[in-house]
Every structure is written in structure tokens, then in C-alpha cells.
Length: 241
Image (cartoon, rainbow, N blue to C red; front, side):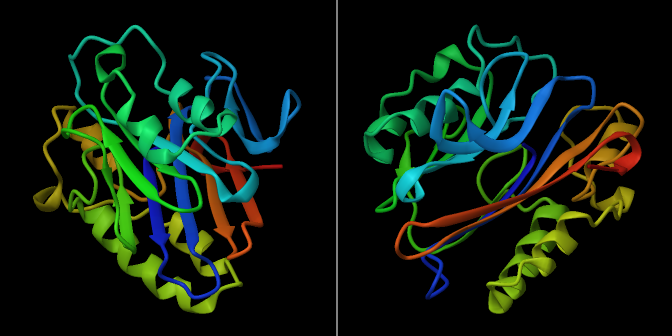
């Protein structure tokens, strides 16, 4: 998952609103968002290679999502990062307890967002201790929380505007398919080749081998009920039925 936008206790009717893009190699096997057969209280996609998930929601608005930290050349951790949101969604403990109990040394760089209906937490093994988040709008890409990469700044602004039109979700999906490439002068320097910096600078990433596989919009109402909508894409950004 390479872009996550969150409104926590901002909207009067929806205390949690999420719009997110998952970027991945198209060849990596995964299943679309749906109730899990072995845990039907959880709805989300599943990584069929390592067994985890990138984003999901469970009963009473329990939520988890993760992005990786872009750090080329750093050795991989022994455990899959996708296991963290999976374990939280299958559990019943508080977001704070789970976030504080993670051994970050076991994983490659990650950013993890967790909500239990009462609190919302951020944990990264590249940004110190876990911390609760106050009501507000937040954004994640492949660096730390609210790092002002151009695509994240633009996406947060449009996300805030789209909140005004809920329960309609069309504006969220519109911003998630914005494939504009950032000018070279505004690109971050994350250690990948320039052609990759350009490709990854768009909100919606598309190429022959790698890109946005799924766009997700999640709304959680005050009573804990939720709606998760997903649109999927294949090579060159073509929609997948």
C-alpha cells in the first residue's frame, strides 16, 4: 500500500474515512477485498504470497493498514510486514497495546495505522515509539507520516474537499486515479533511479509491470458499521472486473 489518506473524527457522521491506493507488482498474487472465509468478521484483500494484508476492517470499525518505507539497499526483515495488520484485525486488544508491543526489528521499514473504534494509532519502525493520533486528516506514502511529498500534499487537499460530499464517494475515487507525474524539480530523492522516482510520484501509478493494483474507500459510521469499496487495476492501469 503506497498511499493512505485518513480522516479521524473529522466528519460528524463518519468518524473514520479512508482512501487508499495499493501499489505492487502485478505478478504478485493477491485476492480482492472480501470477507475472509476463515474469519468472516474481517473484510480486506489478502496477499497470497506471504499471507498478510495491506488494509482491512473488522467488526465495530476495527481498522488496520500498512505501507512500506522506501529504503533501497536495506536488508529485508525476517517477517512479512503484512502480518501486522492481519494480526491486529484478527485480535481484540486495543490499538495502543498492539502498536506498543511490536518488535520492529523483525520487519523491513513500515508505517502502520491502527484503529479500534476508540483510538487511532501510528507505529513505524523508522520513527520512534508508537503514538496516538488526535482528530485530524493524515497521509502516508512510503516515508513517515505526513512527509510532504508532492503527491501526498495534493492528495490530502483533495481528500479534505471530498469529505464534504459524503456519503458520495466519487470524488475520493477520482483523486485516487490521478496519474499526473510530478516535475523533476519537485521529485523527492529516495535512492531509486530517476525513472522510478518519476513513476512513483503519481498518486495513481501505472506501468507494464508495477502500479496501483487497488483503490479503496472505507467509511465507518458512528455506530461502527462500515462500507468498504474497492476498484482493481492491472498493467498500465487498466480496470480489472
